[in-house]
Amino acid sequence: MLKINDINVYYGAIHAIKGISLEVKEGEIITLIGANGAGKSTILKTISGLLRSKTGDILFNNKSLHSMAAQDIVRSGICHIPEGRRIFANMSVLENLELGCFLQKDKAAIKKNMEHVFEKFPRLKERISQSAGTLSGGEQQMLAIGRGMMSRPKLMLLDEPSMGLAPLLVKEIFSIIKEINEAGTTILLVEQNANMALSIANYAYVLETGKIVLKGPTAELAESEDLKKAYLGG
Amino acid sequence: MEHMQIFFQQLINGISLGSIYALIALGYTMVYGIIKLINFAHGDIYMVGAYVGFFAITKLNMSFIPALVASMLFCALLGIVIERMAYKPLRNATRIAALITAIGVSLFLEYGGILIVSPQPRAFPDVFPMSKLTFFDGKVYMTNQQIVIFLVAIILMILLQYIVHRTKIGKAMRAVSYDQDAALLMGINVNTTISATFAIGSALAGAAGVLVGIYYTSISPLMGIIPGLKAFVAAVLGGIGSIPGAAVGGLLMGVIEAMVSGYWSSTLRDAVAFGILILILIIKPTGIFGKNIREKV
Ligand SMILES: Nc1ncnc2c1ncn2[C@@H]1O[C@H](COP(=O)(O)OP(=O)(O)O)[C@@H](O)[C@H]1O
Ligand SMILES: [Mg+2]
Image 1 (tube, rainbow over the protein chains, first blue to last red):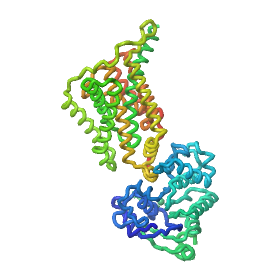
Image 2: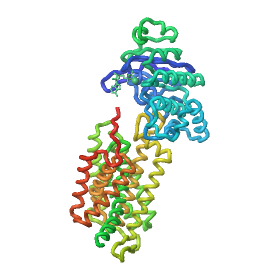
Image 3: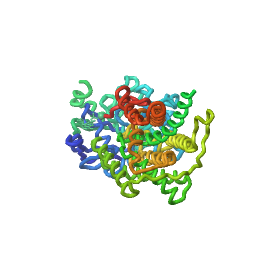
Image 4: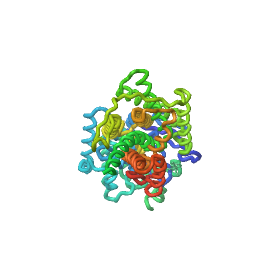
């Protein structure tokens, strides 16, 4: 479904992504784990068109995303839920969700998507007219995911959804991610919380300073001594 | 009793003038909100608006409303062209580069205007019969022009409020202002949204230009400089980036100026206007409706 071929991404002179290739198969949950500053967010931003790779290419269903405008990448079915949630805190929950399907013109479809989001996150429905900035951290993450679901994406890019949340909430969010995947959305999940990520993903890539240092099916990786030492606390 | 009359008369004058400042200030604040640029050419767009209105009425024999609409459309287009040609290439440049470019565009419009329409001030035609509403035995009055200015300004502000809060492009404008990257991830076309913001802000300035023409009856190519600066002060007073702030700041600015003229001396009013700017910058740099500036990472 998504194929990244040997991309190099720079911030000015900083070489942040050094020749990375990876593949996301339809229907799976792929996770990308690595320490702070490894380049995880940079990869997601390059997929969604916020950044461009200097060399290499990204193919989504065999179409190159390289010269596609960000809104066309969204239109083609990719949704990026950014690190730190980036909800529109000055707007209501409803307005945030509406912005999530900005490209959808069919009112009935919007309504249906919203009902679908409320099924997953009944708490958002209770707070529909509340200003998004006044939601709790967990609710904001739910809103960010709900807003992403509004566009009915084929591929969802999730950047550290567990960041700053209490363990119980992390569990809840991860089980929702699993449900979204089971309902047919392919997921590329970026995490520092390697244990949680490995527990729901099919395949994992481990990133270190802009390079992939380890990859494999999660069942195998969870046994890997290197990974245990570096990320799983022994 | 006389004090009351002066007060009410200056209040009426101030609200008329303030409505014009408010319309200009809205464009300043909207453009600042979306690309963090103080568009110093904005006052000159208002001048262009006055001239378009002037030619529409005198040469094309249009009546007031068609001339107002023509001026707004022309300025909207001018705003889009200026953004695309002068500011868009600098979107990732330093802020000072964009600011200097804005000053360049301003000078270009001013002296281009002098070249095209001559530096001679022109008399704006009377489009409304000279009559007035009087109060207090005729000691306080409100002219037809003042009523029209006030009504047009109110209608345009309500329309703007509707666009910003109820339409898709308005939501896009607010989203881009708040967080450009997040807006991109929603599939919002940021370039189109910025163009729309320039178009709307410039159209409001164009309307203000026509209104000031019928109010002061004289227009010239450099007429945009001082009102442009005052509208900028009004936008800062209200809290730059805030739409209600620009409206309130503009009205306050007009009323303060009229009061200074009425009670004190009209030669001091500009000094007071810029004195206000200095005071706000010292006491409350974020203005009346301003939020604490959120630095984006
Ligand atoms: N806007 C930026 N400008 C310069 N360097 C950046 C920028 N964003 C990230 N970087 C650098 O790129 C590298 C990868 O960052 P990032 O992708 O955010 O890492 P991660 O998401 O894995 O924590 C880091 O070294 C970071 O300092
Ligand atoms: Mg990151």
